[in-house]
Length: 459
Image (cartoon, rainbow, N blue to C red; front, side, top):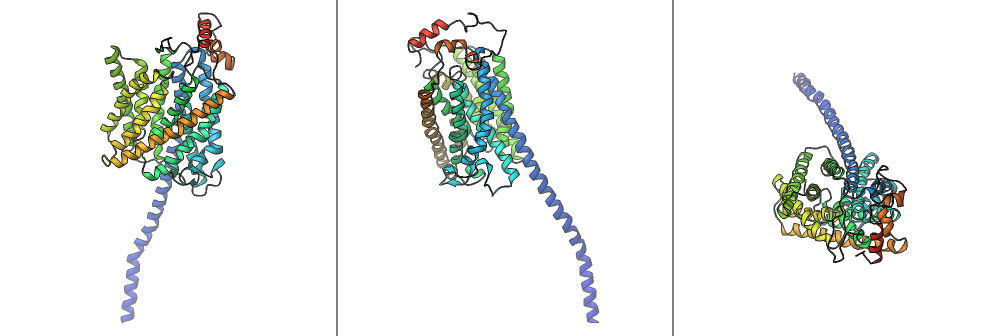
Protein backbone atom coordinates (compact mmCIF):
# COMPACT_ATOMS: atom_id res chain seq x y z
CA UNK A 1 0.00 0.00 0.00
CA UNK A 2 2.79 2.37 0.92
CA UNK A 3 4.70 1.64 -2.31
CA UNK A 4 1.59 2.31 -4.36
CA UNK A 5 1.08 5.57 -2.52
CA UNK A 6 4.67 6.64 -3.17
CA UNK A 7 4.39 5.69 -6.83
CA UNK A 8 1.20 7.71 -7.17
CA UNK A 9 2.83 10.65 -5.43
CA UNK A 10 5.84 10.57 -7.77
CA UNK A 11 3.63 10.38 -10.83
CA UNK A 12 1.55 13.30 -9.57
CA UNK A 13 4.70 15.33 -8.88
CA UNK A 14 6.03 14.67 -12.37
CA UNK A 15 2.73 15.63 -13.92
CA UNK A 16 2.80 18.88 -12.01
CA UNK A 17 6.44 19.50 -12.99
CA UNK A 18 5.99 18.84 -16.70
CA UNK A 19 4.39 22.25 -17.49
CA UNK A 20 7.29 23.98 -15.75
CA UNK A 21 9.84 21.96 -17.71
CA UNK A 22 7.95 22.60 -20.91
CA UNK A 23 7.82 26.33 -20.22
CA UNK A 24 11.53 26.59 -19.39
CA UNK A 25 12.74 25.70 -22.86
CA UNK A 26 10.66 28.37 -24.69
CA UNK A 27 11.73 30.92 -22.08
CA UNK A 28 15.40 30.13 -22.67
CA UNK A 29 14.81 30.26 -26.41
CA UNK A 30 13.09 33.64 -26.09
CA UNK A 31 15.96 35.01 -23.99
CA UNK A 32 18.52 33.85 -26.54
CA UNK A 33 16.49 35.35 -29.35
CA UNK A 34 16.22 38.68 -27.52
CA UNK A 35 19.97 38.73 -26.94
CA UNK A 36 20.58 38.03 -30.62
CA UNK A 37 18.25 40.85 -31.63
CA UNK A 38 20.01 43.26 -29.25
CA UNK A 39 23.42 42.22 -30.59
CA UNK A 40 22.31 42.78 -34.15
CA UNK A 41 20.82 46.14 -33.18
CA UNK A 42 24.14 47.16 -31.64
CA UNK A 43 25.88 46.40 -34.91
CA UNK A 44 23.30 48.22 -37.01
CA UNK A 45 23.30 51.32 -34.78
CA UNK A 46 27.10 51.50 -34.66
CA UNK A 47 27.43 51.22 -38.46
CA UNK A 48 24.63 53.73 -39.05
CA UNK A 49 26.21 56.18 -36.59
CA UNK A 50 29.60 55.72 -38.26
CA UNK A 51 28.01 56.51 -41.62
CA UNK A 52 26.57 59.72 -40.14
CA UNK A 53 29.99 60.68 -38.82
CA UNK A 54 31.52 59.93 -42.23
CA UNK A 55 28.92 62.24 -43.80
CA UNK A 56 30.33 65.00 -41.58
CA UNK A 57 33.32 64.99 -43.92
CA UNK A 58 31.03 66.51 -46.55
CA UNK A 59 29.97 69.10 -43.99
CA UNK A 60 33.55 70.06 -43.23
CA UNK A 61 34.33 70.29 -46.96
CA UNK A 62 31.40 72.63 -47.61
CA UNK A 63 32.05 74.72 -44.50
CA UNK A 64 35.73 75.23 -45.30
CA UNK A 65 35.04 75.86 -48.98
CA UNK A 66 32.37 78.45 -48.23
CA UNK A 67 34.52 80.27 -45.67
CA UNK A 68 37.46 80.56 -48.10
CA UNK A 69 37.87 82.02 -51.58
CA UNK A 70 36.65 80.42 -54.80
CA UNK A 71 40.18 80.04 -56.17
CA UNK A 72 40.98 77.49 -53.44
CA UNK A 73 37.79 75.40 -53.47
CA UNK A 74 39.24 72.37 -55.26
CA UNK A 75 42.21 72.31 -52.90
CA UNK A 76 39.87 72.29 -49.88
CA UNK A 77 37.88 69.42 -51.38
CA UNK A 78 41.00 67.41 -52.14
CA UNK A 79 42.29 67.78 -48.60
CA UNK A 80 38.99 66.59 -47.14
CA UNK A 81 38.82 63.64 -49.52
CA UNK A 82 42.34 62.60 -48.54
CA UNK A 83 41.65 63.03 -44.83
CA UNK A 84 38.99 60.34 -45.17
CA UNK A 85 40.65 58.17 -47.81
CA UNK A 86 44.28 58.07 -46.74
CA UNK A 87 43.14 58.32 -43.13
CA UNK A 88 41.06 55.15 -43.43
CA UNK A 89 44.08 53.22 -44.71
CA UNK A 90 46.55 54.60 -42.18
CA UNK A 91 44.17 54.00 -39.28
CA UNK A 92 43.66 50.44 -40.51
CA UNK A 93 47.40 49.78 -40.76
CA UNK A 94 48.64 51.41 -37.57
CA UNK A 95 46.28 53.91 -35.93
CA UNK A 96 43.73 51.44 -34.59
CA UNK A 97 46.44 49.31 -32.99
CA UNK A 98 48.15 52.33 -31.41
CA UNK A 99 44.82 53.48 -29.97
CA UNK A 100 43.15 50.22 -28.95
CA UNK A 101 45.84 47.53 -28.91
CA UNK A 102 47.13 45.95 -25.72
CA UNK A 103 48.34 48.96 -23.75
CA UNK A 104 51.96 49.49 -22.75
CA UNK A 105 51.71 51.04 -19.27
CA UNK A 106 48.54 52.89 -20.32
CA UNK A 107 50.38 55.00 -22.91
CA UNK A 108 50.24 53.26 -26.31
CA UNK A 109 48.81 50.17 -27.96
CA UNK A 110 51.29 47.53 -29.02
CA UNK A 111 49.26 45.19 -31.24
CA UNK A 112 46.15 45.12 -33.40
CA UNK A 113 47.92 46.53 -36.45
CA UNK A 114 46.09 45.64 -39.68
CA UNK A 115 43.29 44.60 -37.25
CA UNK A 116 45.14 41.33 -36.59
CA UNK A 117 46.00 39.57 -33.35
CA UNK A 118 42.90 40.80 -31.53
CA UNK A 119 41.44 37.85 -29.67
CA UNK A 120 39.26 39.48 -27.02
CA UNK A 121 36.55 40.59 -29.48
CA UNK A 122 34.59 38.84 -32.24
CA UNK A 123 36.11 39.55 -35.63
CA UNK A 124 32.90 41.14 -36.91
CA UNK A 125 32.79 43.56 -33.96
CA UNK A 126 36.40 44.54 -34.63
CA UNK A 127 35.33 45.52 -38.14
CA UNK A 128 32.37 47.58 -36.90
CA UNK A 129 34.38 49.26 -34.17
CA UNK A 130 37.23 50.04 -36.58
CA UNK A 131 34.81 51.76 -38.97
CA UNK A 132 33.34 53.89 -36.20
CA UNK A 133 36.73 54.92 -34.84
CA UNK A 134 38.28 55.52 -38.27
CA UNK A 135 35.75 58.20 -39.15
CA UNK A 136 36.51 59.86 -35.79
CA UNK A 137 40.20 59.91 -36.71
CA UNK A 138 39.38 61.51 -40.06
CA UNK A 139 37.41 64.20 -38.22
CA UNK A 140 40.41 65.09 -36.06
CA UNK A 141 42.56 65.37 -39.18
CA UNK A 142 40.19 67.54 -41.18
CA UNK A 143 39.94 70.14 -38.39
CA UNK A 144 43.50 71.12 -39.32
CA UNK A 145 42.58 71.65 -42.97
CA UNK A 146 40.57 74.80 -42.39
CA UNK A 147 43.14 76.51 -40.17
CA UNK A 148 45.91 76.25 -42.79
CA UNK A 149 43.67 76.82 -45.79
CA UNK A 150 44.65 78.90 -48.83
CA UNK A 151 48.43 78.81 -48.40
CA UNK A 152 49.71 75.27 -47.69
CA UNK A 153 51.13 72.93 -50.31
CA UNK A 154 49.04 69.84 -50.87
CA UNK A 155 51.89 67.33 -50.50
CA UNK A 156 52.93 68.73 -47.12
CA UNK A 157 49.37 68.74 -45.85
CA UNK A 158 48.93 65.14 -46.93
CA UNK A 159 51.99 64.08 -44.91
CA UNK A 160 50.63 65.78 -41.81
CA UNK A 161 47.16 64.30 -42.32
CA UNK A 162 48.69 60.82 -42.37
CA UNK A 163 50.72 61.57 -39.24
CA UNK A 164 47.79 62.83 -37.17
CA UNK A 165 45.57 59.93 -38.22
CA UNK A 166 48.21 57.27 -37.67
CA UNK A 167 50.00 58.56 -34.57
CA UNK A 168 49.14 61.92 -33.00
CA UNK A 169 45.42 61.33 -32.52
CA UNK A 170 45.65 57.58 -31.70
CA UNK A 171 48.28 58.09 -28.98
CA UNK A 172 46.13 60.51 -27.03
CA UNK A 173 43.08 58.40 -27.80
CA UNK A 174 44.78 55.42 -26.19
CA UNK A 175 45.26 57.44 -23.00
CA UNK A 176 41.57 58.33 -22.72
CA UNK A 177 39.68 55.57 -24.55
CA UNK A 178 41.95 52.53 -24.78
CA UNK A 179 39.72 50.51 -22.46
CA UNK A 180 36.73 50.85 -24.78
CA UNK A 181 38.12 47.92 -26.72
CA UNK A 182 41.26 46.46 -25.26
CA UNK A 183 43.74 47.47 -22.56
CA UNK A 184 43.21 50.85 -20.90
CA UNK A 185 44.85 54.27 -20.79
CA UNK A 186 46.31 56.19 -17.88
CA UNK A 187 43.81 59.05 -18.19
CA UNK A 188 40.99 56.57 -18.35
CA UNK A 189 42.18 54.98 -15.13
CA UNK A 190 41.93 58.37 -13.39
CA UNK A 191 38.24 58.61 -14.29
CA UNK A 192 38.61 61.14 -17.11
CA UNK A 193 35.21 62.01 -18.64
CA UNK A 194 35.10 62.59 -22.39
CA UNK A 195 32.22 60.53 -23.68
CA UNK A 196 32.44 61.31 -27.40
CA UNK A 197 35.59 63.37 -27.75
CA UNK A 198 35.45 67.10 -26.90
CA UNK A 199 39.14 66.75 -26.11
CA UNK A 200 40.09 63.40 -27.65
CA UNK A 201 38.90 64.42 -31.11
CA UNK A 202 38.22 68.15 -31.17
CA UNK A 203 40.87 69.69 -28.94
CA UNK A 204 43.48 67.38 -30.43
CA UNK A 205 42.48 68.59 -33.89
CA UNK A 206 42.30 72.18 -32.66
CA UNK A 207 45.75 72.21 -31.06
CA UNK A 208 47.25 70.63 -34.17
CA UNK A 209 45.52 73.34 -36.20
CA UNK A 210 47.05 76.01 -33.95
CA UNK A 211 50.51 74.61 -34.57
CA UNK A 212 49.95 74.53 -38.30
CA UNK A 213 48.64 78.09 -38.45
CA UNK A 214 51.62 79.38 -36.47
CA UNK A 215 54.18 77.66 -38.69
CA UNK A 216 52.41 78.61 -41.93
CA UNK A 217 51.94 82.26 -41.07
CA UNK A 218 49.03 84.34 -42.35
CA UNK A 219 47.65 84.65 -45.85
CA UNK A 220 49.01 87.58 -47.80
CA UNK A 221 47.03 90.70 -47.01
CA UNK A 222 45.53 89.37 -43.78
CA UNK A 223 47.28 91.96 -41.62
CA UNK A 224 47.78 95.68 -42.17
CA UNK A 225 51.32 97.06 -41.77
CA UNK A 226 50.51 97.93 -38.15
CA UNK A 227 49.41 94.34 -37.48
CA UNK A 228 45.66 95.02 -37.49
CA UNK A 229 43.74 91.98 -38.80
CA UNK A 230 41.84 92.44 -42.05
CA UNK A 231 38.76 90.48 -43.06
CA UNK A 232 39.19 88.12 -46.03
CA UNK A 233 35.61 87.08 -46.81
CA UNK A 234 34.84 83.60 -48.03
CA UNK A 235 33.13 83.17 -51.36
CA UNK A 236 29.88 81.41 -50.35
CA UNK A 237 28.11 81.72 -47.02
CA UNK A 238 25.28 79.46 -48.28
CA UNK A 239 27.80 76.65 -48.85
CA UNK A 240 29.17 77.17 -45.35
CA UNK A 241 25.66 77.13 -43.87
CA UNK A 242 24.82 73.89 -45.67
CA UNK A 243 28.04 72.43 -44.29
CA UNK A 244 27.02 73.40 -40.75
CA UNK A 245 23.61 71.74 -41.12
CA UNK A 246 25.29 68.56 -42.40
CA UNK A 247 27.69 68.63 -39.46
CA UNK A 248 24.79 69.15 -37.06
CA UNK A 249 23.05 66.10 -38.50
CA UNK A 250 26.21 63.99 -38.40
CA UNK A 251 26.82 64.97 -34.79
CA UNK A 252 23.87 62.85 -33.66
CA UNK A 253 25.87 59.88 -34.91
CA UNK A 254 29.02 61.30 -33.38
CA UNK A 255 27.58 61.61 -29.87
CA UNK A 256 24.72 59.11 -29.65
CA UNK A 257 26.69 56.59 -31.70
CA UNK A 258 29.42 56.57 -29.08
CA UNK A 259 27.21 54.25 -27.02
CA UNK A 260 28.01 51.62 -29.71
CA UNK A 261 24.74 50.07 -28.54
CA UNK A 262 21.14 50.46 -29.61
CA UNK A 263 19.78 51.39 -26.21
CA UNK A 264 17.51 53.95 -24.60
CA UNK A 265 20.61 55.94 -23.58
CA UNK A 266 20.72 57.54 -27.01
CA UNK A 267 17.56 59.57 -26.29
CA UNK A 268 19.19 61.84 -23.68
CA UNK A 269 22.37 62.12 -25.74
CA UNK A 270 20.52 63.17 -28.89
CA UNK A 271 18.41 65.72 -27.02
CA UNK A 272 21.42 67.23 -25.23
CA UNK A 273 23.28 67.46 -28.52
CA UNK A 274 20.38 69.27 -30.17
CA UNK A 275 19.85 71.69 -27.29
CA UNK A 276 23.52 72.59 -26.91
CA UNK A 277 23.89 73.38 -30.61
CA UNK A 278 20.85 75.63 -30.52
CA UNK A 279 22.10 77.42 -27.42
CA UNK A 280 25.52 77.89 -29.02
CA UNK A 281 23.98 79.53 -32.08
CA UNK A 282 21.67 81.82 -30.08
CA UNK A 283 24.37 83.02 -27.68
CA UNK A 284 26.93 83.54 -30.45
CA UNK A 285 24.38 85.55 -32.43
CA UNK A 286 23.35 87.58 -29.39
CA UNK A 287 26.96 88.30 -28.46
CA UNK A 288 27.79 89.69 -31.91
CA UNK A 289 24.53 91.63 -32.00
CA UNK A 290 25.32 93.38 -28.73
CA UNK A 291 28.94 94.03 -29.65
CA UNK A 292 28.52 95.29 -33.21
CA UNK A 293 24.85 96.13 -33.59
CA UNK A 294 24.18 93.38 -36.12
CA UNK A 295 23.78 89.59 -35.78
CA UNK A 296 26.83 88.07 -37.47
CA UNK A 297 26.04 85.07 -39.68
CA UNK A 298 29.55 83.60 -39.69
CA UNK A 299 29.82 83.66 -35.91
CA UNK A 300 26.31 82.23 -35.58
CA UNK A 301 27.27 79.27 -37.75
CA UNK A 302 30.42 78.71 -35.74
CA UNK A 303 28.30 79.09 -32.60
CA UNK A 304 26.37 75.99 -33.66
CA UNK A 305 29.63 74.09 -33.99
CA UNK A 306 30.97 75.47 -30.71
CA UNK A 307 27.87 74.23 -28.92
CA UNK A 308 28.22 70.81 -30.53
CA UNK A 309 31.90 70.55 -29.63
CA UNK A 310 31.19 71.70 -26.09
CA UNK A 311 28.49 69.12 -25.34
CA UNK A 312 30.39 66.20 -26.85
CA UNK A 313 32.23 65.30 -23.63
CA UNK A 314 29.25 65.38 -21.27
CA UNK A 315 26.34 64.58 -23.58
CA UNK A 316 25.63 61.22 -21.92
CA UNK A 317 25.61 62.45 -18.32
CA UNK A 318 24.39 66.06 -18.21
CA UNK A 319 20.83 67.13 -17.55
CA UNK A 320 19.20 69.12 -20.36
CA UNK A 321 19.58 72.37 -18.41
CA UNK A 322 23.32 71.93 -18.07
CA UNK A 323 23.54 70.93 -21.74
CA UNK A 324 21.95 74.26 -22.70
CA UNK A 325 24.32 76.11 -20.37
CA UNK A 326 27.34 74.28 -21.76
CA UNK A 327 26.36 74.98 -25.37
CA UNK A 328 25.48 78.60 -24.69
CA UNK A 329 28.79 79.34 -23.00
CA UNK A 330 30.57 77.63 -25.91
CA UNK A 331 28.75 79.93 -28.34
CA UNK A 332 30.04 83.00 -26.51
CA UNK A 333 33.52 81.49 -26.26
CA UNK A 334 33.62 81.12 -30.04
CA UNK A 335 33.16 84.86 -30.50
CA UNK A 336 35.72 86.03 -27.95
CA UNK A 337 38.27 83.29 -28.68
CA UNK A 338 38.11 83.97 -32.42
CA UNK A 339 38.75 87.68 -31.87
CA UNK A 340 41.63 86.99 -29.48
CA UNK A 341 43.28 84.36 -31.68
CA UNK A 342 42.99 86.51 -34.81
CA UNK A 343 45.59 88.83 -33.32
CA UNK A 344 48.23 86.06 -33.46
CA UNK A 345 47.14 83.55 -36.12
CA UNK A 346 45.27 83.55 -39.42
CA UNK A 347 42.62 80.85 -39.10
CA UNK A 348 40.21 81.23 -42.05
CA UNK A 349 37.45 79.07 -40.55
CA UNK A 350 37.93 79.61 -36.80
CA UNK A 351 38.96 75.99 -36.25
CA UNK A 352 41.15 76.65 -33.21
CA UNK A 353 38.45 78.58 -31.38
CA UNK A 354 35.64 76.16 -32.26
CA UNK A 355 37.46 72.87 -31.74
CA UNK A 356 40.46 73.60 -29.54
CA UNK A 357 39.05 76.14 -27.07
CA UNK A 358 35.43 74.93 -27.03
CA UNK A 359 36.67 71.36 -26.78
CA UNK A 360 38.59 72.29 -23.63
CA UNK A 361 35.55 74.07 -22.23
CA UNK A 362 33.28 71.10 -22.94
CA UNK A 363 35.67 68.72 -21.23
CA UNK A 364 35.84 70.95 -18.17
CA UNK A 365 32.04 71.33 -18.17
CA UNK A 366 31.63 67.54 -18.20
CA UNK A 367 33.35 67.50 -14.81
CA UNK A 368 31.73 70.62 -13.38
CA UNK A 369 28.22 69.50 -14.35
CA UNK A 370 28.73 65.77 -13.82
CA UNK A 371 25.61 63.73 -13.04
CA UNK A 372 26.88 62.79 -9.59
CA UNK A 373 27.30 66.42 -8.56
CA UNK A 374 30.26 68.78 -8.38
CA UNK A 375 33.54 67.22 -7.35
CA UNK A 376 36.85 69.04 -7.06
CA UNK A 377 38.66 65.77 -7.70
CA UNK A 378 36.74 65.17 -10.92
CA UNK A 379 37.36 68.69 -12.14
CA UNK A 380 41.04 68.17 -11.39
CA UNK A 381 41.08 65.04 -13.54
CA UNK A 382 39.39 66.96 -16.35
CA UNK A 383 42.03 69.69 -16.17
CA UNK A 384 44.77 67.07 -16.30
CA UNK A 385 43.22 65.60 -19.43
CA UNK A 386 42.87 69.00 -21.10
CA UNK A 387 46.49 69.86 -20.31
CA UNK A 388 47.74 66.45 -21.44
CA UNK A 389 46.02 66.87 -24.80
CA UNK A 390 47.76 70.19 -25.39
CA UNK A 391 51.12 69.03 -24.02
CA UNK A 392 51.15 66.08 -26.42
CA UNK A 393 49.46 67.45 -29.53
CA UNK A 394 50.78 70.98 -29.89
CA UNK A 395 54.56 70.44 -29.62
CA UNK A 396 54.51 67.26 -31.71
CA UNK A 397 52.38 68.94 -34.39
CA UNK A 398 54.50 72.09 -34.35
CA UNK A 399 57.70 70.07 -34.69
CA UNK A 400 56.26 68.13 -37.62
CA UNK A 401 54.96 71.22 -39.42
CA UNK A 402 58.25 73.02 -38.81
CA UNK A 403 60.29 70.07 -40.10
CA UNK A 404 58.13 69.72 -43.20
CA UNK A 405 58.45 73.42 -43.87
CA UNK A 406 62.22 73.20 -43.69
CA UNK A 407 62.52 70.01 -45.73
CA UNK A 408 59.95 70.41 -48.52
CA UNK A 409 58.63 73.94 -47.99
CA UNK A 410 54.99 74.14 -46.98
CA UNK A 411 54.15 77.69 -47.94
CA UNK A 412 52.90 78.78 -51.36
CA UNK A 413 54.64 82.01 -52.42
CA UNK A 414 52.84 85.33 -52.84
CA UNK A 415 52.04 85.36 -56.57
CA UNK A 416 50.99 81.70 -56.62
CA UNK A 417 48.89 82.23 -53.52
CA UNK A 418 47.16 85.07 -55.34
CA UNK A 419 46.41 82.86 -58.35
CA UNK A 420 44.97 80.26 -56.05
CA UNK A 421 45.91 76.75 -55.01
CA UNK A 422 43.42 75.20 -57.42
CA UNK A 423 45.46 76.23 -60.45
CA UNK A 424 48.88 75.80 -58.87
CA UNK A 425 48.33 72.53 -57.02
CA UNK A 426 45.65 70.81 -59.13
CA UNK A 427 45.61 72.61 -62.49
CA UNK A 428 41.86 73.11 -62.43
CA UNK A 429 39.28 75.69 -61.37
CA UNK A 430 36.28 74.92 -59.21
CA UNK A 431 34.24 77.39 -61.24
CA UNK A 432 35.60 77.38 -64.83
CA UNK A 433 33.36 80.24 -65.94
CA UNK A 434 34.65 82.47 -63.16
CA UNK A 435 36.87 85.31 -64.37
CA UNK A 436 38.79 87.14 -61.69
CA UNK A 437 39.07 90.89 -61.69
CA UNK A 438 42.57 90.71 -63.15
CA UNK A 439 41.84 87.87 -65.56
CA UNK A 440 43.35 84.45 -65.07
CA UNK A 441 46.13 85.73 -62.88
CA UNK A 442 44.16 85.70 -59.63
CA UNK A 443 41.91 87.99 -57.66
CA UNK A 444 43.56 91.25 -58.56
CA UNK A 445 46.33 91.49 -55.98
CA UNK A 446 49.28 89.64 -57.53
CA UNK A 447 51.72 92.52 -57.49
CA UNK A 448 50.66 93.60 -54.01
CA UNK A 449 50.85 90.01 -52.79
CA UNK A 450 54.36 89.49 -54.07
CA UNK A 451 55.54 92.81 -52.65
CA UNK A 452 53.95 92.06 -49.29
CA UNK A 453 55.62 88.68 -49.05
CA UNK A 454 59.01 90.11 -49.97
CA UNK A 455 58.41 92.65 -47.24
CA UNK A 456 58.06 89.91 -44.68
CA UNK A 457 54.28 89.71 -44.35
CA UNK A 458 54.40 86.25 -42.86
CA UNK A 459 54.09 86.99 -39.16
